[in-house]
Image (tube, rainbow, N blue to C red):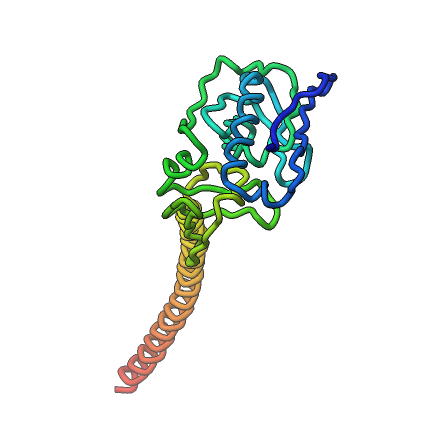
Length: 242
């Protein structure tokens, strides 16, 4: 037996629970074959809700809400406020159906693949966010992927994430672009500050120079005048004596 979607009587919320009918428990959940079969059944149930506003899982960091735009394989593609989110079908516990989306006519670009693992391969060499929140959330550059895990470059660290721990994945922008814009803003603000200091110093220098020059000029001028007056007086008295 396997875990899968078994729709119950539809109520106002449109809630589809996942019923665990596995008697063994842990071993069945860990086997790759059962995970693939389970995610395929979940995708088939979700395919009927394409174009509707849905909520994947009831709450917590694993909850994803948006318009279900496609079910290409064993994963779901949602378009929400944060952009396109790819949901691994094996981690879907419930789907709450809302009203039909009013923006269905708007085209949304997304990556289509035959399976979730193939999707991860197509997202290689891009900046991605794995999982929505909590301690399992990771953002970085998707460098490598194999059948067991993928390799993320997070800053200066290499992080290996097992594939069965990936619940959702989405493409994010390059973080280095934010750093560049931040440095440009800092440079601009620093230039304004330094320019203000320079202009302030020039103004103060001009003022001090004008003041000192005026004072010194005034003193030298008065000195010349007084000196000329004194020398003229002396010269006149000598001539009158002769």
